Length: 463
Image (cartoon, rainbow, N blue to C red; front, side, top):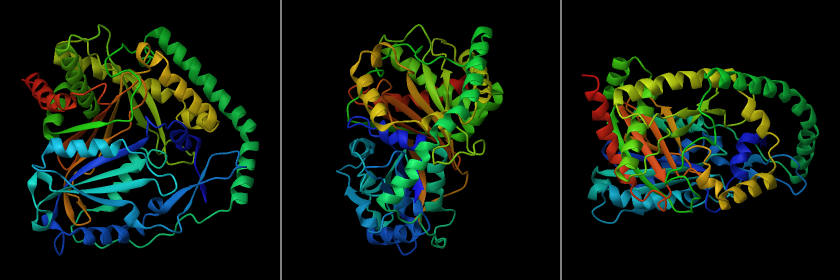
């Protein structure tokens, strides 16, 4: 068995019926490259072979009534890929609206915790094409956040993919094994007993981080503060419904803007998000005077020696959405991001992981339900939205023999923050995935389509 870290487990504890905490992606695939031609049975068989080398896809949660620590991962002895791979057809004409409606519905469905926490939906009839005649299909993946963060999720997808259509599958890999309820309880008791010592060890870094934050706040070199974000239409309690939209940009355009303003790719991404949201709120007469604030996940892979599949921290970033001029806005975002990164780096990389070890399921669940029912979700949002940038490989990829034409990532949304925008760079493109609660942001395609407009706005600013 393998025990979940506190941060991994917190995504289980924070999950509610209206706040499922899985991460998704929508892949557009060209079936004409699949050796032997496409059919669903062949795709399923290829997936089953590859999963033999990926034990994470064959592991499920286990616990004990007497377990005083977090749950564990164990091998699912009855694993059957057919329970996780589903097939569905788009209604005519099979365009982006039909695809996004189905994907939004799938994104709102919770994962079955009695099985490995992932699903894959093969969606045929994309753009009215016949997959068996070399047409297009879409594949929607769902993996629980307890299993992956942005980096580990991208790594899992890279294991499923290859750089050649006919690449041989990797060698099988053994799983974590099983565990009895007694073993889970005994090892959990040992973990629980060590918590006071863990608390003593984490206090010095916590105090140091607090002092650093206060010092930076006084000198004006701190990141944006939580609970300082202005109220917007997408900052309220969410329902269990989801809508999705997506856009694709040329990565060379992004790099052109990056080089002209001497900023980072992530700064350009943040400037795009800022410009799109600014226009969206301005058109509705709802643009706040204060800047929007994004929560940006920050990977600490390689900086942390803590166990767990989620190796992530976060920073609060000002989007400077109150600035009308795009050139001035991207410069301000870059400066603010530089300050935020310095502040984030000064905080212990393992602080979030260390404190989450003390997460209690009942306390987390009650706190989330209470927060969802209070006016704080609207009047005092922690942040306005989550913005995440996941780097991907810049080579052609093939999923089970089918060429990947796009990969749109979709992160979770939370009570008080009903919009998530995640981007992935892949083979010369920047794929943008948007997911929201439709009761809060029904016009999600307007936001998605404005990314092309925002890119043109930034390109004009380079001339």
